[in-house]
Image (cartoon, rainbow over all chains, first blue to last red; front, side, top):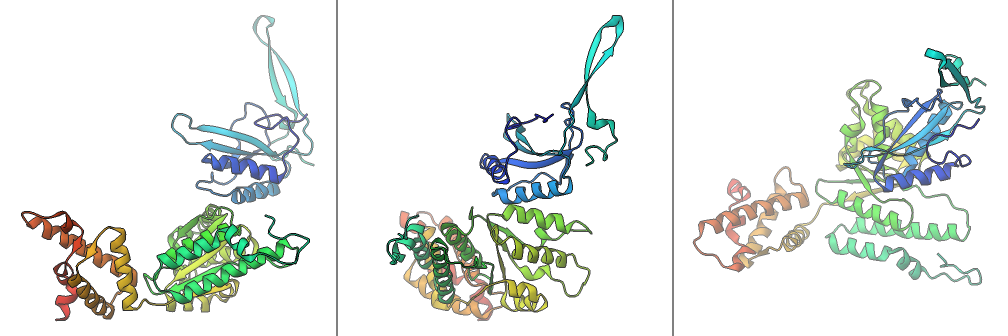
Amino acid sequence: MRLTQGTFSYLPALTDEQISAQIAYALDNDWSISIEFTDDPHPRNVYWEMWGLPMFELRDPAGALAEVRKCRETHPNQYVKVNAYDRRLGRQTTALSFIVNRPKHEPGFALERIESKDRTIRYSLRAYATREPHGNRYAE
Amino acid sequence: MAIVTPSSDRIDVRAMLGDAGIADVLERLDADLVGLQPVKQRIREIAALLVIERLRSELGITSQKPSLHMSFTGEPGTGKTTVALRMAEILLRLGYVRKGHVVTVTRDDLVGQFIGHTAPKTKEVIKRAMGGVLFIDEAYYLHRPENERDYGQEAIEILLQLMENDREDLVVILAGYRDRMETFFQSNPGMHSRIAHHIDFPDYTTDELFEIANLMLDRQQYRLSSAAQEVLREYLVRRREQPNFANARSVRNALDRARLRQAKRLCEQEFIEREDLFLIDAPDIRASRVFTDSV
């Protein structure tokens, strides 16, 4: 199951050239770039690991793209995303976020039914990958 | 750009120069900067090389991308930073850098305070400078021979690696005083050999300094009275002989102080005319310490 989170997630994987163009677009809008990675694909997992510090005052996408490549090389089998932060007063939030790397095999999610009071059923999602401990998920 | 048509072997170089707007930048370089003939000559040569290289690559003649890293050496106040800004503009117009901005850094911006701090710090600066020019002022401070565990060496190594591998993304310009840069290059031969263009900035002559002074005053809408012109010449001759003379920077400081004295003089008068606001007179310069000390 292909994870669909963030912008462009219904498109085929972006090439480096396309990633670079997107980063350039973000920089033209004065957004700062940061890179994050994780092996926990749950949609409510908003705390991905930071790949270095956010990059401020960039003018050219080459530097950020080099970081994307390095992060991919280090975590080839994890999710990697690029975030662009808009610091303008009144917005001050992530303006653009897209996945630039994903594991080769994405097993997807299990739907769990939790019986609670009075036979009510509550639903929960659990990624198959997270049955393994952190670090062993998505092992090839 | 279709400068070269396949049917003809003739190439319109003028059009190429005009298209890139290089002639325009070089002209402004000539007009705005007094003197510095050898520097202007070298920049013209570099610009010519870049134009031809681009032409060659457009024609499909294989040629290596020229190494563009430079070192600017010269006494203080000889225009190294100004020329670096112009160089960035030339490189931008020829398409050798993508953005053409100049990131000016010194040792403090590159070297960290503790183990493991230098590499991320240097790399961050490099990322900021990508697509433009990294101007390292007083580059010799990176190397501290008296302390072999100094983190400056680490910054130098990262820079060297980058100057070799990421030529497409970044142009590095090292700048500093002549003699200290020489010792720096002697102790870092790798750095020396990776820099293709060593440009030396000569000191200004008194006439050139005088011209610079007039140019500066002109931009700030001031004028020298004819008596003041004489005094300024004498001032420059004397100032050159004194320690800590920093060429154009000293001239600017001298003029700033003259403006202070002029303002004070005007405030002490009862009535002034509009013309007086523009005029710097002989006593404004004559009051300088340069005259009182040596007499």
